[in-house]
Amino acid sequence: MIYLKNIIKSELIFIRPEIKNKEQLFDFITEKSYNAGLITDKEGFKKELWERENKMSTEIAKGIAIPHVKTDYVKKDFVMVIISKKGIKYSGFASKVNIVFAIGTSLAGENYINVMAKIARFLNKDKIKENLLKSDVPDDILKLVSDFERAEKVELQKTKEEHYLIGVIVNNAEMLNSVEEILLESGLRNPTIIDSEYGIKKMLYNIPFLRSMMLYGKSSSSSKTIIGFTENADFLPSVVGVLKNEGIDFEKKGVGTMFSIKLGQIIGAIDEDIDF
Image 1: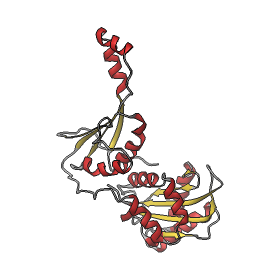
Image 2: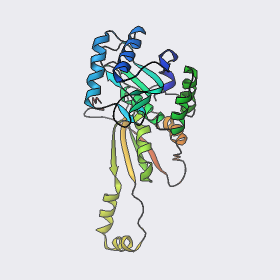
Image 3: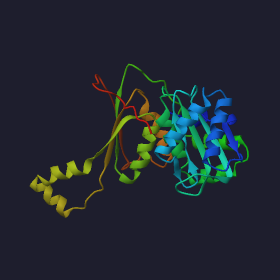
Image 4: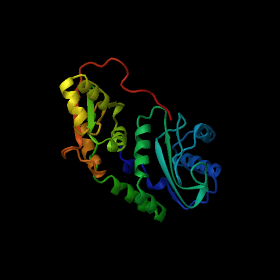
């Protein structure tokens, strides 16, 4: 499990910096990360930061940007937080962004996608966005992060020699996106979604007796199943608290089912090398 409170440091939180546009922002990120000893080469790092940005804007929502880069120029993975009261000229959803979470990871970094998923969920809360803009000192932001993660369980040590198949059946399809995001940030590998509606209906329609029941009975909402791999034997207990904090309690009837199966042999890659 990734915890932002262990990644975001007060010395990399900047409030009200004099930054007017994206060019100045990327210069600022590069200079501060270099001075902190986090990157090896300023020009190389900034070039790759821009190359990633030119593929697709990292403005993920109105007023929010998450510029990020995965490169060998990064010596130590970091997250830099920049809060601009006046706004920074960016692109896309709005003329300016006020909240910036910049991510730098090395090519060997293992938590790139997990950190991005966690930050995206953190910034999806309207109250958090409001309080970020009201923050006056780095401690205000660190407290917001800590409060957000208060219900999450400390990550257990992974067992490298064993792998587990995780299955999560979500009875309410409207919860699917939230459940999927939390499973991804928690380290679920190769997440795959299975739509169970088609298979069940096909089976029932091919049986005359049950077909009549389907025609005259009330149709139930379709369920979705997410499967994936993990090395953590206690993966499910570690996500229960996070899900509950999002209002999704699998211990209540009708919400869904979660299960874990210890695997023997696995043929093929456990995860893909994905770059965003």
